[in-house]
Every structure is written in structure tokens, then in C-alpha cells.
Length: 344
Image (cartoon, rainbow, N blue to C red; front, side):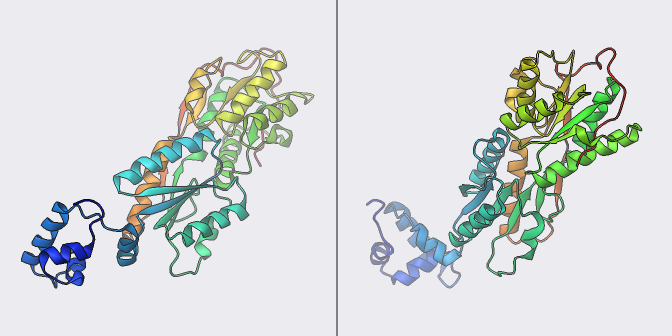
């Protein structure tokens, strides 16, 4: 027989009631071991494939999780998705993917949709709601794990503050004093932490803040290019750019090239993420490594533990590592030793 075999077919072959077959397949202790063994053997021989819908009604689990991402065009998010899907498969889960485009309303709609689909849990990266998930009162609401929101109790994050601190320290040691931060307020928690890392490092080195050296972007190539162009138009441009992510850093490199400036001879550039493309820039990009695949794997692992009812679950912060390549060098000769950057 084949996959069209039903519980009634097995019941006839075993000469028991269909309800007995159903209970045996669920390992119900009310069914004797001998009868359970017979039913399991017959179900295998007859090619029985249980209905997923029926199984879900019994277990109240769908073996699916929802993943809300900022955008499918974000290369760092793509690494996170790979990690989530790899770990999900190990646990027998499928993944529903929805983009929020860093819009709080769209994110809330996405989570609501995933709740209605009865996914067993939800992972959100680049959340615009952050700790707002703690206010949910629906007793049937699935567990939610956030990525890069360390104030949330169920979260997997990179040590963004330490990563920014190491990046700016590297630039200061190279003699840079006018260090700009190309921000991305759309990634709220990560941006705050990286901005604070800039501010704290400059304060440690007794560098006065200059609000003109913090320019807002949007995490994209175009946003990085536009932010760098605004900085280069200042009466006293920065000698180094610390960018929220690698995408903005590549955009900044384009702006510097179009302005006829050499990197790092005229201006140094640091990114954040260490995407695959960072090593293939010309020159190769100095950046801060955060492992997107590892973030995704650990987020899925945490979500699985929450789905299983584990209570001893705490936030996890993964290390960030400075990767020095060829876009950073000594401050240009004769550059001003004025104010530093203030990160907002």
C-alpha cells in the first residue's frame, strides 16, 4: 500500500477500533505494548503517513516558527536567516519568513499574522518594538526571541558596544582625532550601543565631542554614500569614518573615490558585520566581525528551549572582533587635531 493509507485501514488490518490505532500512534499508555507494537508494524508496512493537520490538532504544535526580518536585501540579515534555518532543520522545524522593513506597524502585523498561523515561536531581527513584546498579555502568544536587543530577556546579541569601542580605539591609536560615526537609527538598539561605544572611547581619550561628525544613514549603500558626502562637505572633514555596517562603509568608500580621496591615505574607513564582500572591497575593508549565522543558530536554539517549556533562559551576548584590513591607516600628515565625534 502507499501514502493514502488511513487509520481505518490499519484498524481493519489489526482488528481494532480506529481510536485504538490513533492512541497507539501517540504512544498512549492505555494501549498495551503488544497492540502498540502490532499497530506500529502495520503502519510502517502499509506506508501510513500521518496527517500534519491531525497531528497539530493533537499536539497543538505546528513544527513551524516565524522569522521577522528587516529586509531580504540586507546581506547581514541573509546570514542570520541561514543560521536560523540550519538550526531549525536540526529540530524538525520549518520557517515562515516575513519582512518588516524596519517599520513598527509592519512588524506588529507580521507577528500577528504568524500568531494566527499558529507558529510555535517567533524570532525577530532588527526589531522596532524591542521590549514592547513584554507587554503582551495573550496567554496563547508564542514565545518571541529578539536578535540584537540585549535588554529583552530572550535575546541573542552581539557585543555592539565593545565592537565599536575596539574600532574607535584602533583609529585613535593611528592618530585620528576627527572620527565620524555614520549612524543607522533604524536599527535602534544596535545603533545606540555602537554610538555609546564611540562616545565612551573618545571620552576616555579626552576628545571633545563634535555633533557635526555624527551623520544619520539608513544602513544601505546609498545611505552610506550620502552620509559620507555630507561629512566631506564640512569645513573641516573627518579623517576617519566609523560606519554602522559594512553596507554603509562600502557606500562611503564610493563617496571618497568620487571625491578623489585615497583610502586610507586621505581618510580611513571601518565597517561593522564583516560580510563576505568586506574582504573583496578595493582596498579590503577593516571591519568588526559579528557572526550572523551564529546569531541565527543561537536564536533558534533559544526559541526551541522556550517552546519546550524551559524556564532557565537568559540573554546571550556574543563577542565582536575587530578585523584589520587595508582601509585604515595613520592620520594624514597635517590633519587637524580638533574635536572628535559625538554619537547620538
